[in-house]
Figure 1 (tube, rainbow, N blue to C red):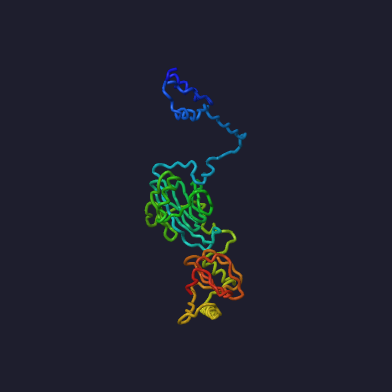
Figure 2: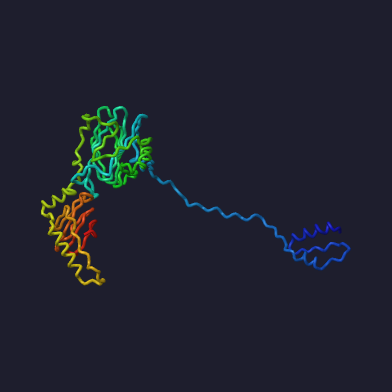
Length: 361
């Protein structure tokens, strides 16, 4: 047997378990270690492709009847069918709030404001974006020849609009009504929010932002002195939107409280009585170190728009900013309910202070 033939036979034999071929005859003595090396090789086991796992069996299904309305989620955010001529101007107008009213139009606890909008653009159709943070009634008028094609009204609290013809579409989106649309109020500091909303609603950016002053704003071209404006014949005054069965708000509500016997106007003696109560409280045993020079004397409370609460009482809405007040609650009288707003209350029952003025007296 030739060396080549013997080598091929050995390789074939290695592929078979338990086969050990004879060493090839070369006429030379073979080293025992070489024979042992061949015998120690691990046999090669032939293997086929791994079996594939069985495909999972899907659970049976059946049709599910559901009438999906693709437009339902955004219906309140669009002007369906509105076609704007290329010359249409988009104007934004508003402020934090308009002129203060002595009533409420919602349950926010804020008194209503009123905004009067004069639109003067006879040479091009107009769409309006009106927005205020405070609950606001918008009254709209326009010069002859001005055409208002649509109005988007927005804000944080309730917004109402009056004076527009019935065929002018209006969309109202506020934080409170959860319309699903983004809410806004118009002010220079919010200018960056307006163009994206205008493009989404009208397909174009805002041409001009008009900040309102004192509850009034002129939109479009400057309004010449003595200009005649018109409004819809069905326009209602702001008071027509007053919340039914609601009390007067702000200072008017406090004056009503005096007339109805719930409050009386406070004077310097009421402030002095509070200081005396605070001093008596300071002399009560307290686990605190003595103060060099003595404890500072209490300061006189603010007596601006100050009242003494005479019996159980609900504070009127709108006691914010310049409409805030000071209240003294004598011993034996319950603390009033309602929103204190930016006001301050001094309670003789607990000799404690609540509100923005605390810590300053």
